[in-house]
Length: 68
Image (cartoon, rainbow, N blue to C red; front, side):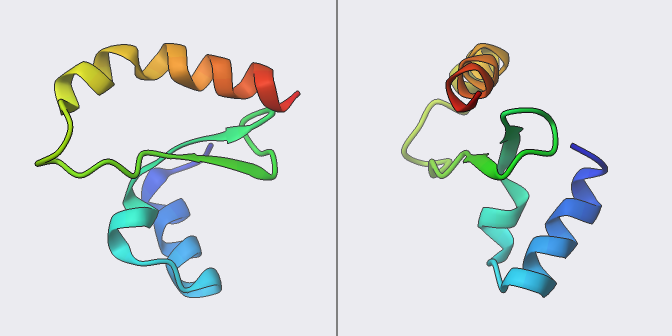
């Protein structure tokens, strides 16, 4: 996916994304540079973040498979 900081800055400057959204990009699909974006849009107060991080790789893999 590239450097997360570079991706965040690119989305903010080129597409006017807010800081929270651009900081929570989990993946691009179908490959690391595809046209689809998987975004963790959950709020820290409303979701179990450690639980999400435990399943993140599985979710990313499923996302990439489904976008192929």
